Image (cartoon, rainbow, N blue to C red; front, side, top):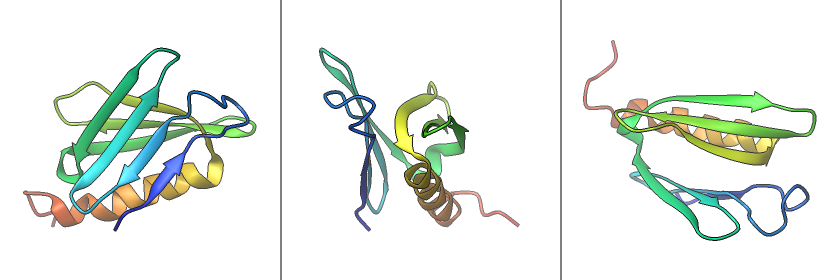
Length: 100
């Protein structure tokens, strides 16, 4: 599995946030005018995903275990829902402690 999502170019055409999925985890790239941050998080280290929906765009909050929250902004509502869905599909499959 390798999917990639970008934030809207309408809201900020230069500094577009990015979410990239692979088999082991997710990479979150938060762009800024100068620099930015790349965070890779294993699926098993993600404890929650929240979406704040605005009028047109959504903000995604990723809550990893023992790390600060990752916030990525300006995604379409459908992309935000798909990102959350993909993360939640993979989190239980890779947890070290089986859910019962």
